[in-house]
Length: 193
Ligand SMILES: [Ca+2]
Image (cartoon, rainbow, N blue to C red; front, top):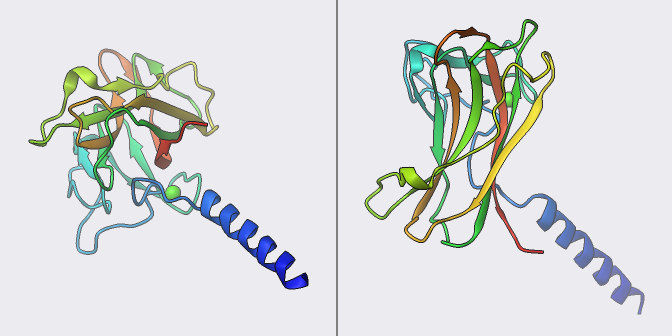
């Protein structure tokens, strides 16, 4: 009888581990892993941060100045960003949540500069379904400096979606100033309760 209880306890613990360690749908969300032989800094290799692809990459880089976890984050100071496709195909109708922490150091963000997360979808030809892109709230001048803020966006995958993509973007349109650090990006499929 005693063994019975042990089995139940072990089964319970295993289900807990299974829940809490459920793998996200992206890799290197903490930006710790770099690609050997590449230089993932401004004006350099766009694919130097493992699993991610930078764009507008003269305006962003891998950084060790601030990190929420580990020793690195993704730093951006003008128009551009970084993206990664989800591992595996998406299921149309299922809800996906893309999240990241953002941080701006003392001085904060000024003017029209801000950061956001885009949840994007690609069809069977790999084309982005631009009209279906969903944007998070903006991390802008109203965000307190020196504090990591959790930002997320979630949406059901549209009918034509075969792949999903998380994009962390800095928008520097118009007049503004400031820097954003991004860390601990994640994508989860949101299961109905
Ligand atoms: Ca990190």
